[in-house]
Image (cartoon, rainbow, N blue to C red):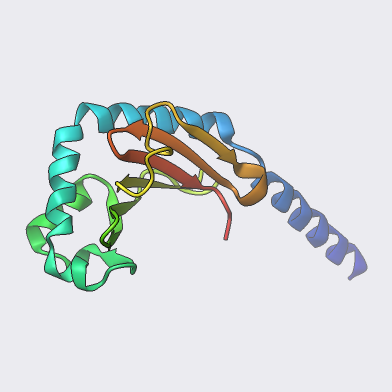
Length: 156
């Protein structure tokens, strides 16, 4: 029985170490591709964002995850076609923000969030990059024109 416990412990530790592997290069490659796609279709993304900022349900649920099933069917279908699973909006007197939770990646790459915001001029600058991976598994890339992508690679 002790032998079986040892094998299970070794397998668990091996899995744990492999799951903590830093997939930084693959993540950067995927993010670069997504940034290109966002830039190419920026007018479309801007229009979609403005429609979301006017959606009554999204407005009434500011700061909460809003799932596609709760939105207007046309808007929900468009978001689903773009690989979006939920949105979160924030509107106040100083700024506006729409955060898109994407289905573009999975663990161990992490979850990609596409954000349009007038709240953070620095992080939305084209070429901006912040690496907080070793502190909190977060990386941020500025796209420009109020857009950024950030990743959360935490396994929980």
